[in-house]
Image (cartoon, rainbow, N blue to C red; front, side, top):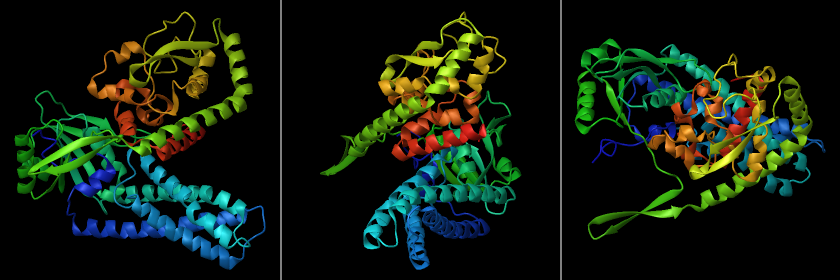
Length: 485
């Protein structure tokens, strides 16, 4: 049995919250219980506020105050139960808080399940325009409230008011992911203080969390795992990342934590494809596990994603056509050469396709070489620097989306010479249709090579869904409007 098979699996917030049996300190435990209660009250109030705003914005006749209060209370209760059914109060927001937004959008859309029947039962009170506006208002209200709550709880945790100090052990590429997970999953109440790396070649250093900005750095301590080290760092919980540890190392780490009076949690990489489920059968005294093939939900997801891609891309091309023509004219005036830059990229299952971009570099630049990582790159034209800063050079890829080579959301397609050097982990990026935007593009790590930061794309591959795609598009819009989140 491998190391990762011998412990409870789970890397991301929802799995970690359900699978790690941690008994926190009494103060932290009380704080987290109170936090969940406060969050439910805040969600109730936010959803009720969203419905109230929808009624006030209705262009038709206004409902009576009694009807507004009744529907608002139903909206609040429904939101709490819907978020609870989607593990909204168990784990965390996940990478870049995308899962948090996904749950909110799912809850807002689900509100139509009771608003539409109530419209027919109370036609004089609930208008069709209010029903159309309500899901949007509920989503906006919940998203704003949850971002404010997240900031407030993180501020309290930094003051050591409600979180346990955590050391992460396990020389693995997943250490950064686990640390970022704990930083973003405030409901877990685990504050990563450091990562321990006991490999002979390790050195003391820092890594940045996976996030929109490089706001938190986590120190990596190059030293053996000892009771003295745990005590010196005031560790209350040791998180053991088992991906690259053998059973003996895992047992030794567990014993060390127990001798130091710290709790211990095990985390391993949960790397399973969601398209396939498993069927377990007991035959005599044997357990037989088999793949049951693609799930129906993913078939519907593929269809809905394609419809969304074609619809939004077609609308965008029509609405943005004057801007596209203006950009083309500026490129022609700025430097000699073609308006479009066409290049081979690797897409789904390794299929090569031609990608379209506005030319942002001088025509004599090499066609296949690493992309510019700074605006001072001499290959960039004057207008090219502006286009890349606002990602306007990517707009022609809407044509690739309509052709089916790309999607609006997905991992960025890379050049063939880079894909040739992929390792097995990086190859998993090719299991889905590449996209114009994604988690990596929203992160602080977008300044570095895509293939050196596969965590974002692998997270998307594991957790992708229709509402996650909508959430990423919303975060992309916010990112563009604010120039970075």
